[in-house]
Structures are given as structure tokens and as C-alpha cells.
Length: 401
Image (cartoon, rainbow, N blue to C red; front, top):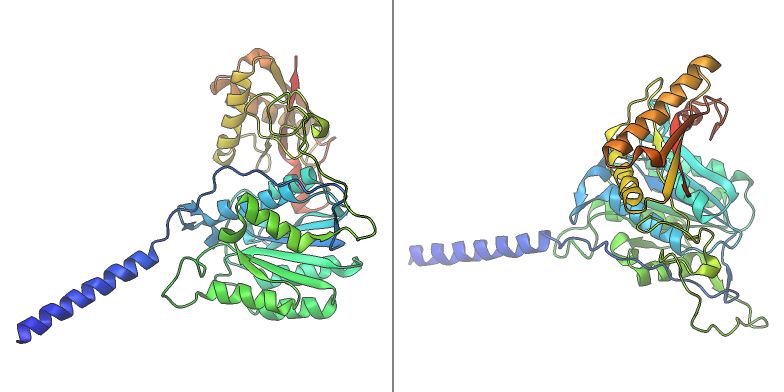
């Protein structure tokens, strides 16, 4: 009899372990094809005057979730929001946090803004941070955002992308202080990580709780997840809820007919909205239909192309190999530390190293040229460590022969 009971107990334990294992393993997140919704001109007006995106670049974002690194999921979702959001005169900010973002003494950095929002400008700011590192100073980032917004007027949406894990002290309190100092702020959180969809049957994670409580502190926002908004339909719904309001009844939107305009270069942007109508086949484009080429950043006084840029340069090489009529100028730059003569040589070496990489990837030498600007063409202020970091770069400028 005891043996029979023990056998039944073993079967029950094994069944329970099987159920728990099935509950713990979520399927890979499908981040496949994405088509940004185009909101009809005149049908909507801005719901807010300003918006601030806070991006988590801490080390926990380097962990995998549903088959992808959380940092890659986050970057993709923010980029899809940027593709979907129409340019309606918002004042925009982008702030990142994690020790890798602002140097050894600065764990959060403002990458974009305050300035009039453009899709291309925001995309450039988003591309500045390449990999996650360090702890999660979320409260410090929210406090910095509070300071960023001190001169803004009107309604503001603060959108926080994070896994909410291992944060510094009291990010919920920081969110409450932000709301107290800026009553017209609404806070939205996007959880990148385990959520109610993937931890069925298990306790709520600390990250879930933290992100939901931060959203509640804003009183007029809400909490959502990457699973909910990464698709074309999900992102369109998110953008509409956060950023857009229907146009007033006295000025109804015009009847929208199905566009018949062609897309000559096949980049997904119709000719009437395409600012770059001869984009080479296979190139990544922004909302204006222009090729978004990478910027290669260098360490101080170095011309070595770091491995983190190899993938982006390989994509560029593939486009150039498949489009022999396209040429590219590689523009080297430096910060302002050192003499003008030395930095001119360093900028030429940086451009030449990128040229060498592309040639090794199969791009004909005749399709490439280089120029060095030294420190005469800064992209940011040389008065700060962060600005100098952004100035140590090579930009890739394509043209068609």
C-alpha cells in the first residue's frame, strides 16, 4: 500500500514539474516585419506638447528574454515608435541611463533635445548608445528628467522603457516627485521582460511591480509591455493613446483615399513623401526614405574599428556591393584635444580604417573615398566628456554616380 501511495505521489510531483516548466518557457518574441501606420493628415492634433523617452541601458538589459537580448527588444520598440509617430511640432527629449551612457562619473545622459521632434534627429540620438552596462540608476534618471523639463510648458508624456530590475533607491518616489513638480506630466512605462503574459501561474516579478507603480505615480498614464506594442497594430494604438487626439469636430479630417503614388526606389516610402527618391536597393531608410548610414565612434586617440560596429558596416558593404553605381565618402573627425595638425592626421586614419574594413568586405576601392576634418566639424560640444566622445567618429556619406 505504501509503495502504491509513493508511486502516485511521484507521478503528481512529476506532473507539477512539467506544468511549471511549460509555464516558465515562453515562445520566442516575433520581431519580424513591421509597417508603421500613417496617420491621416488633418485627422489628429497633438495630445501633448512635449515628450521625454527614458531608455534603460543597464547591464540587465543585456540578458536574453524570449530569444533576444532585452536591449535589442527595447531599441527595436523605441525605433518603431519613432517610425510611427507623426511630426506634429512636439518638443522632444531622449535620456539614457546606465554607467556606459555617460562616462565613469555620469550614469544618465541626455542624448537628444530639448528640440523640435524629427524622426531623423531622434533616430540619431537613439543610435548613440550601443550596448548595456552596469547597474540600474532609474531613480537618478527620473530625477534628471525632472530637471530637464523645468522650462517646458504644456502637457508632457514621459515614457520609460526598462525591465525594472535591480533599480537604485526609490524610483517610485522619484516618479511621484516628478508629478508633483510638473502636474501636467503623464507617465507611461513599457516593461521589457517577464510580464503577465509570460509568467502565468507564478508570482509577479519585482520589475513588473516597479514599472506599474511608476506609471500609477503619474496618475494619468498607464503601464504596458513590449509584447503589447511591438507589432504594427499595437504600436499604432500606443502612439494614438499617448500622443494624438482627434481633430476638433468643427474641422473634420478630409476623406482619405487609398494612395496611388508610386514608390520608384522600392524603399517603402511613397514618392510624394520620399526625400531621397534614388535610395539604393537593400538600404535601411528612415521615415523620409533616406538611407540611415551608421556612425563609427572611436576611443580617445585611436583609429581601431571596434567590433560593435562590424555588423552595421557589413550591412553597408552589402548595399554597396549590390549597387555598383553608389559611391561613399568616409568623413573622419576628432575631438579638440591635441594640436590641429595631429588631429587632422588622426581623422584621416580613422576614415582610412573604415575604408579598409569596407574593402575587406568586398567593396571596390573605386567606390570609396576618404576625407579628414580634424576637429573642425564637431557634432557636439567639445566642452564636455560626452560631447568629445560623440566627436571621435567617422561618418559615411553615400552618393550616386
